[in-house]
Length: 89
Image (tube, rainbow, N blue to C red; front, side, top):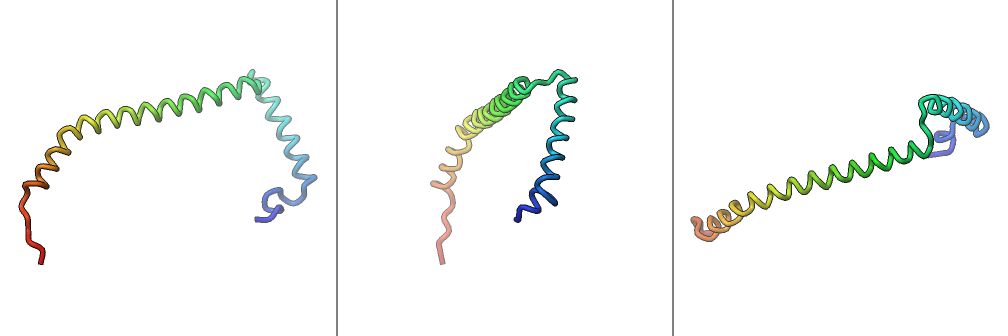
């Protein structure tokens, strides 16, 4: 990948567009009452909630895995130990 694909036709024009777009977005965010600190706090809350959701899902799945494993693994082991053996040819 070369810089022309990343930046565009020229660095000056790209910087001017980025500055103007940043000003427009800043005006819109200001009108909506969004501040940089508020935005970072919301992002932090989102990541924390996402992590909590993932941990809760793993905890939920592990609880049911253990509940099922108490029955499934012993039955599997008994079936393997006392199951029909076929001679290998």
